[in-house]
Length: 102
Image 1 (tube, rainbow, N blue to C red):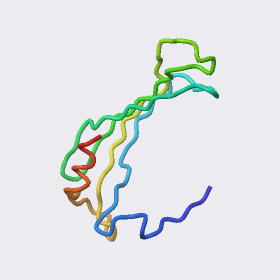
Image 2 (image 1 turned 60 degrees about the horizontal axis):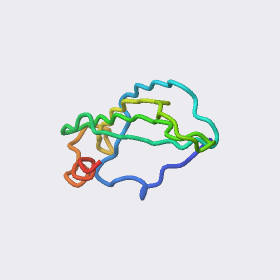
Image 3 (image 1 turned 90 degrees about the vertical axis):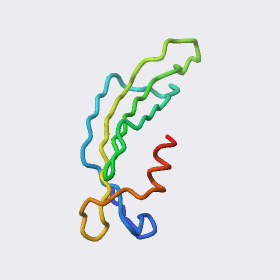
Image 4 (image 1 turned 90 degrees about the horizontal axis):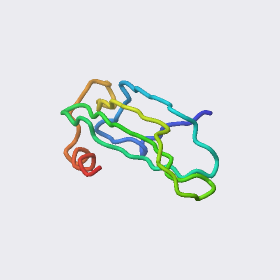
């Protein structure tokens, strides 16, 4: 798959880039299952943010009651960098406010 990044898809001051990803796959999800994605801010600093995500299967295709089980978990560290120099810069206040609302 190929895609092009357009200027309007980025912020003129800076962009988020992925610094690192730790991912754990526990069991496959199946067609028809209902999944719940839970996201938490683990750390929000001046130039980076760490998100923790978990995906749970909360309902099978049969719609019968079941105990939810974890399908996937990840920890993703995003850095905020200047879009020209790719040097780390402070995350803008508006982005920090939006991230804090997660």
